[in-house]
Length: 282
Image (cartoon, rainbow, N blue to C red; front, side):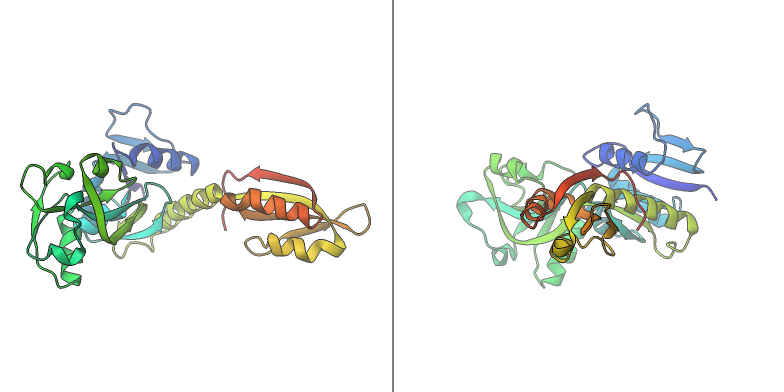
């Protein structure tokens, strides 16, 4: 069957989604005005849609899969579910209020809260058994307090710079940790084409997070070195022509690699090399 996939057409998720799909072996549109693009080699049709609408189309069954934000999926209430986090587009959903008010979360009872995510906010308030008036806005909610339509806001925050510039301060717990995710309609994850898509994208996520490290180590120091580089299953160890020496290869978290190289050197490893991973299946 031809797999129909929804992809963000604009916004912070669009470029990263297209790049990840390319790295996973799928062709992508070259003209940003195209709303549909067919990849005949993989028997896939891509539909470029507003990120906020993607969960609705996937949940209705019109499209089999899509890439959107976790916040947008949960806010939509669509009949769709997350099957894979994609490790980009990360943000948090937070409360914010005027800096001088020094709000606490308990102070929101009976207040007006402006948000572009009414479904998310309503679910959170219900879980806290808290009643407040929700003011639904399409965007730029940081202006709602200054313009007098809300006492506080609930919004997606990346760095917090926009809120600080508007004279607002974040308060309360994190309502949601969001990122880009792969979604499917509830009950459709058993389709082989969905499984292939998820496996390919998972391979890209892992390849971005890890590197390969190779090094030589004396046999007497091998155990200590392998403890630093246990790999995914276990490190690959091969004997060298030089007696009592071994070559080791293992996958290591990219974020840890410089520290691990230093520690490998300190236990006697030499010839330490690091290689990028472009794709994998684990």
